[in-house]
Each structure stands twice: as C-alpha cells, then as structure tokens.
Image (cartoon, rainbow, N blue to C red; front, side, top):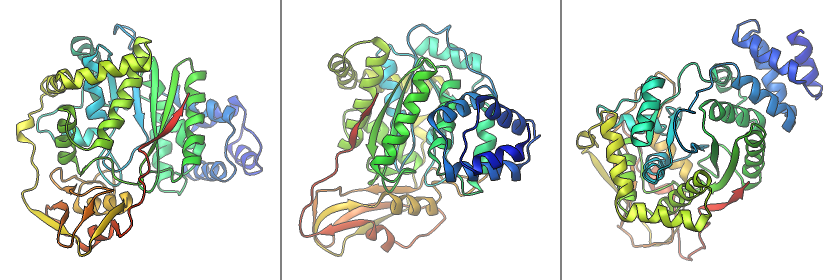
Length: 424
C-alpha cells in the first residue's frame, strides 16, 4: 500500500477498507508515514467524512496501537463515564464517589485540559499532595480496596490517538465527527471498563455547537461501543451556560464538595444524579427508579461524601490546603432585569486568561483563580447587585467582559433544560 494512493482515495470520497485504515495507523505510529502526509489525509477526512464502518475500523486500529488495560481481576461490572467537556464540568469529582459508594467499581482514567479550564486531573492536582500518577497495579489494587481510583492515562493507552490528536490540534482538523468519535472511543475501550456512559455536550461552551450534531456524534459512539461488545449509552446535555457556579480548578473542587453534601447549583446536582443513576443501573442491572433511590440515599446519608474523602486520603491529597486566591473582585450589574443567558464561551475565555487553563500543553495552571457565578439564569437583579466574583492571580482582565457574558432583559425567558435526552 502507498499512503499517497490512500490520500487520493479519500480525497475522491471513496471508502477506506479495514486493512487500509490499519496500515495507515500502524505506519504513522512507526513514523513510516510523515506528518505532512497524515495532515493531508486528516483534511480529506474532515471534508468528506468517514462512514460508520470506517469510523469503527479507525477506532479499532487506534485501540490496538497500544495496551488494553485488564480490569478482570476487579469484581463487579465496571462502568466508565466520559464527558466531551465543557465549561465548569467537574462531574467526575462528584459522580465517581457517588457510584463507588454504592458498590460499583470505578477505575477512572482521566486527562489534563488543553483550553479553557483544566481537565479532571488538573482539578484533582489543585488538591496539594494528590497523586494522579499511579502505576497500573496500584491503580487496580486501590479499586479493589475502596472501589474507586482516578489517575492519568498511561502513554501505552491508544498512542495513535495521542499522536494524531496533537497533529489535528495544529492543522485545523479537530472538528470532524468521525475523528472525535474514534479519539474518544479508542481511549474508553482501552481502559477496560465493561460498560460505558457518555455525556455528549452541545452549545456555546462545547466542541459540538448544536443538538443535531451532538445526537449524530452520540449515535456514532454508541454504535462503536456496542459493536465492540460494550454496552454503551449517551446523554445529550446543554453547555450553552457554565455547568455549576464555579469555573476554575480549586473552585470546582470546592463546588464538588458542596454537591456531595446535597447543596450547591441545582443544574449540576441534577445532572450528576442522572449520570450516577444510569451508571448504577447499568452496573447492577436494575431499573432507573431503583438506582436513583440508591443514589439519592448515598448523598443524603453522606456515604458519597465520605467516599470522596476516602479517595482523597488514599491518593495523598489534603483538602485543607487547597489554595483559592484571596484577591477577589466583585462584578456588579449596571442594569436591572432578568438574567436570561450566561455565555459559557465568554466565561471560559476569561478564566483562561486568568490562568485557569492552558494555551499550550507545557503551560502552568494557576489553581486558585477563576470565576464564581453569584446570580443565575431566571433570577431578577437590580442595579448594583453582585452577579459574579473573579478570583485573581497574577494576570488581569477587563471586568466589563464578565458583565457582557450576562444577558439581562426586562422580560423573563424560559430556560433550556440541562439534559436534552439519551441515545441507547
């Protein structure tokens, strides 16, 4: 096979075979295919797309480019959860202890963030001492002992995805449905769970901007997961507005603690309850209502919060030492009316400039900065009311940008639901 012929084939919108896709991935990992050649192929894929079958073969090839973690020694049905990401998405910090407290083993491999705010690992690393770099044997042993462990993905898991994603990021080939699906599912399948629940986000603060595309992506990933022998479901959720009241790594850990204690932002709490319920239902093979009852009881009795504390302790973290910036600026509104919208993308970009996220992979994160939303959608505000607080480090912003993210109008508009639906 010759890569130039395969580039031409996809450029002419013809389907690639399983063997051709396997050849491309294996040769690229071995550096036999050059970056400029792979870039050309990725652009052809972005323009012409891949069929469901081609995407399945691409996922399989990327999955087989590295190791597949064996979790079979852990008793019970392991259910993994993945979110396509968004502004203020700290759901893993809440869901993992809830589900683990109910006897469902959670072996969670997560990543660091590149972009607006940190990933799950960045949020956990805002807890001084918390160790995310756990070797696979200790990782499995911890799940056996306390039912939960959250660590970084190893270099051996889907190395083809890491190499291809780095190239996509600098060649304008990120926004391809097939490439997004293959990237996510190759990593999920490689981390060894028995079943998978996906949280596919759409809206201003998400990679996918509308419901139609989110459903298309969800169906594609569910197809890939089910055809790899893993029961897979996907929730479609709204990311037009930030998820929760806190955006910024240390702040989001604080908010996770609030939710685990039955308090905090209703949208975030409701979403975490729904995701946890589906995971418990899938693992225990029980109906949704029964599973929901278990989840609510876990939160009410503090069983979930105690499991969170146990997780932090096992991985060396000290919650008392989380550093939130003491330099706080109160943002006040200059108009009265109802808050009808909060632009998640604007809030995210402001937080990134404060230092809560990375522009480049080697950038350091300021764990103590971010934004706290004080007034939420649907609330009426008067002139001079504090609508947000900005936690500032060594970088400055224009505070008028924060005000501009809040849409305040005289007539109250109906709020979009946080959960759109589920794809099975």
